[in-house]
Length: 359
Image 1 (tube, rainbow, N blue to C red):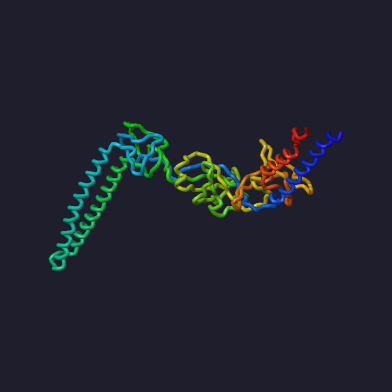
Image 2: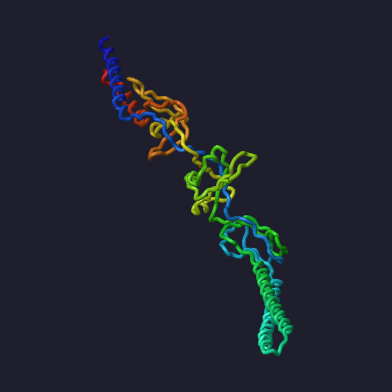
């Protein structure tokens, strides 16, 4: 009987030593649950759109001679996209230049005649009425010259309209014409968007919009990286259908090149602060979908308690996780769940009697 009682006594002693080991190491690894004040952030869906986007239309009529781009092609600023037959426009420019030359010649004669008749009038050899008529002719000739100059400018503009160039560097979205097609004024030719400047459009609920003050409250998630908006505009009116307010946030140029119009992004908007119960990331023991923490008990070993988690955040260079249920302010937990679990395993192994020693 005595030989059989010794192993049970040994197990009891070793278990007691194991629990003492846990209790003695818990104090240095404890964290008092205290409410934290964090920014109240809301995550919304936003749609990317190009700041510079539009459709180029014909400003003159003619036949399409060439098309230098198609859907998806990258173009540079000033690159020739469409060439329209310019035969008529060149002829109009030549005609306007000839008309201007004729107007200049007539104007020179009229101004010379005015100077001579003015001198003769002062000498008393020319009547007042004849001088008035000369002045009128000189003014008319000068006006004809200005009209001829305007006609030449208009003709040159019509000629320039036969070359459709990219107004900015970007990507072609759609092409509406083919080579050999006759186009008229205001007919759509090609559409595209600039790649250097992008923005995100989202809609804020009124309770969030009421707390919006500046673009520093807006950031965007791109490839799991949070990017601060360079500028943001909150519309001064609400959508009567959804009772929300539209927000337009501009992306930095570096990030504008990695997104495309129509793409959806997450938009984070900070609206004030709120108090939360949170614990350090390393205090959480995760087993599948179950999350738990070791909670200190009065004069007893820590108890593993299941909790419900919320959002993760970083504050003061510490990774925290919000606790929605399972913990209250003022309770003590172990800061390092894995270390506590390892200590328990060590205590349990120390409490296991060696079979060979029993023999």
